[in-house]
Image (tube, rainbow, N blue to C red):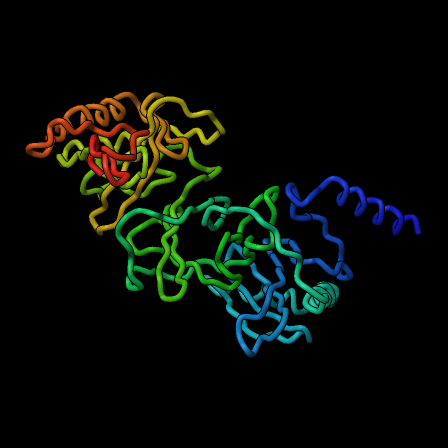
Length: 356
């Protein structure tokens, strides 16, 4: 009876502490009777999450049981039947066999799969990311796309999707993804370290994810696998991150700057960013692009790669050597737009004073 009162009091405390704008996804393991249970974290990297079945063969709610480190995963239905199974990288089937053989855990899994409903939707604007082995990977928004032929071997499976299941206070864990369904395969990218690039396929489109933060990162090389793979370096607009303002194309200079970035110390602590920001675009030999914000005052290349003054000076020099735009003939009286003057007489909302 005391235990029941304590649990009820704890529930009331959590409800009082959280309103609709600051709700934090519950981390308490309330057991198989909890009607809103959506995730179980078991020992040895096993994650169990509950979601809608992805096919007619898996109607209603199912349980995804994932051994995150190896990518082993199985889908279990409401009756406890194994709907699908994947033994992951290097096999490792005993991890899943242990779950199936543990009656107490199976009772909890079946109870969760048979709970009346999924949790009520949460609302948070997540960056498109995946997380494995402590590394958070962010979707590459650079130019140049990789095709299916660039996919290497399968490395992981998504265990849990945050969309609609986790509020703003949630702390991401291995196996999580912002916008990929549980069961989605995560692949290595041919020619790159999996600690730098991974990829997923959704609706036939390949999305590349690149390392953003890593607790093991000590130098830039721990985050960026770009040595010997960069064709040129672009310095892009601080406004949109896409428009190239200047370019460094000399092979010797490109190689020197890449070495500086890869040997630079990493400090991924939170900080306020001061001074001018640009975007550095590493144009790769394979046609893809690695783009990172760069603050010239501190020399930080996102995220936390602290380059030395030579890198900053080279970027500044390239910008200073950028040719001044020539006004069109017979329109010398037309004023150049500033950053805030995006209306006539400057025209259609495009800055004429800077190349766009």
